[in-house]
Image (cartoon, rainbow, N blue to C red; front, side):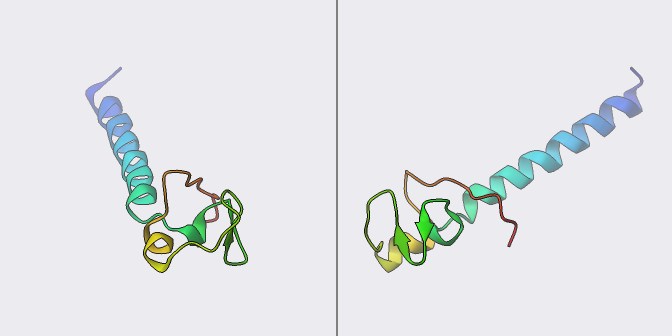
Length: 66
């Protein structure tokens, strides 16, 4: 493999890593699969505002990009 090909692979891996890091840095209840219509289905409760902003340990990304 040529050095330029290796550099392309490194660039792709770096962009993917940045994508996943942004998911964790910006997680919140609003993009969690378990959060439906303002209620957390994991705990059958409305999470406090401070938790809604950052999510919890049971967070599961819903893969919707908006």
